[in-house]
Amino acid sequence: MESPLTPTDAPPPSLYAPREPVFPRRVKGYFRTLKWWIMGVTLGIYYITPWLRWDRGPNLPDQAVLIDLSGRRFFFFMIEIWPHEFYFVAGLLIMAGLGLFLFTSALGRVWCGYACPQTVWTDLFILVERWVEGDRNARLRLHRQAWNGEKARKRLMKWAVWLLIAMATGGAWVFYFADAPTLLRGLVTGEAHPVAWAFIAGLTATTFVFGGFMREQICIYACPWPRIQAAMMDEDTITVAYRDWRGEPRGKLQKGAIAPADAHGDCIDCMACVNVCPTGIDIRDGQQLACITCALCIDACDDTMAKIGKPRGLIDYLALTDEVAERAGTAVKPVWKHILRPRTILYTVLWGGVGLGLVAALFLRSDIGLHVTPVRNPTFVTLSDGAIRNTYDLRLLNKHGGAREFAISLTSDAGLALTLEGQAAQTVTVPGNATTMQRIYVVAPAGSRAAGTDRTDLRLWVADLGNTDRIHSDTIFNGKDD
Image 1 (cartoon, one colour):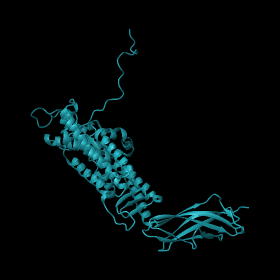
Image 2 (cartoon, rainbow, N blue to C red):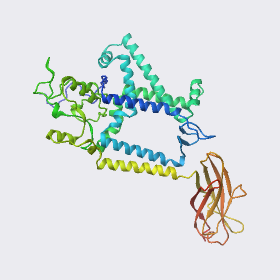
Image 3 (cartoon, helix red, strand yellow):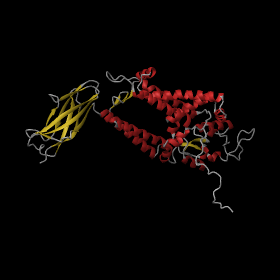
Image 4 (spheres, rainbow, N blue to C red):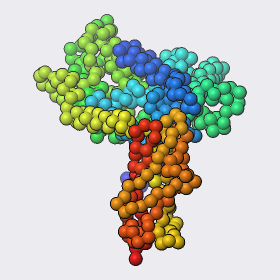
C-alpha cells in the first residue's frame, strides 16, 4: 500500500496565481463626482503650474515655480531657496509625512483613494479605456476573445491615447526644471538637451506601464503605504466598511419582489460593490490591504439600495466603534469626535509646529550668506617677524538682485589683524544672486597670546553696506603652541 507521504506524479500547486485584470464598471454618485473634481484640480495644477509667470526683476527667471539645477536654486513664486537652505525642503517633506499620518489616522487611506498620482492617472486611463472599449462587460468580452481586427483596432487606439497622456505627463514634469516656453521650443525644433528627452522618455514609459497595465498591482504590491497604514489607524478611524449586521445573511431578490425576504439581510449579493472596485476586492470581506478607500463601492451600493427601497449606508464610511454601538442599538459618536482625538490632535500640533517653524525661518533668514573654511595645509604660517598667520576661504552669498558691497571684519579678545587677498580695503563686491570666494588672512603679532596658544576663538563678520544686514560665523585661530 502506498504511503500517504509518498509524492505522486501530480504537479505541486503554484505559489503564485496569474493576475486577473480588473475592469471596473462605471458608477455614478457623490464620491465618484468628488473624485472627478479632485482629478481635474490635481491634473490642472500639474499641467498649468510651469506656465505661470512671476516677475522677480532683471537677471532672474520669471517662471513662478522652477527648480533651477544649473543655478542651484528653487523658486516658488516670491520664495527663493538656495542650496544651503535645504532644510526648508526637509521641513516640507516632514510636513507631508505628518499630513499623511494625520489623514490616515482620521479617514484611512483617503490620500490613496483620491489624490495619489497613481490613482489619478489610473482613473484617467480607465476613462479612456471605457471610452474606446465600452463599459465593464464589453471590456471583459474583448479581453477574452481571440485577436481579430476589432480587438487590434480598439487596443491600438486605446494605447495611442494612453501614450499621448503619458507623454504629456513626462513633458509637463521637465518643464519644472527649465524655462517652459524655451524648453517647449527646443522640444518642437528638436534642439532640446538630450537629458530632457531622456527624462520625458522615462516618465512616459513609467506612466504608460503603471497607469495602463499595472494599475492595482502598484497599490497592492509596489506601494509600501498599505503595509504602514495599520500603525496609523485605530478603532476610531473612519474608513469604508460593510455593515454585515444589517446586510447578512445575503439573499437574492425573488422575481417580482421589491426587497429581499425577511429571512435575509439587505444585501442582495448583486456584486455591484465588487464590479466597481478599482482593485477588484470585495469590501464585504472586511478591511483589506488592497482597499484604497475610494468609496466607489458606497456609490454602487447606495444606488442598489435606492432601487430596492432600502436605506443607504449598507456600505459606508464608519469606524469600528460605530459597529459596536450600532450592533448594541446605542447612539454612535458624531464624526467630529472620531476626528478630534489624541492621536489626530498630536499629529496636527506637530504638523502645525513644523509649518510655523518654516514660516518663521523663511522671514527671519538673511539676504546675505557666509561660509568659512579654514585652510589646513598648512594650519598656520610663521612670518619673518615671528607673527603667526592663518588663512581662511570665505564663500560670500548675495541673494539680492543687484551687486552689493560687503565689509569683512573680525572680533576676538586676542588682538588679531585681518587682511583680504587682492583687496586694498576690507570690502568685497559680490554680484547679484551670486556667490563669491574670498581668501583672507588673520595675523597674530609675535609674542601675543593668540600666537602662542594652540586654539583661539575667532568670530568673522560680514556686513552689507547697502543696509543693516550683518551675519557672523565662528571659527578657530591656530597658534604656535610652545
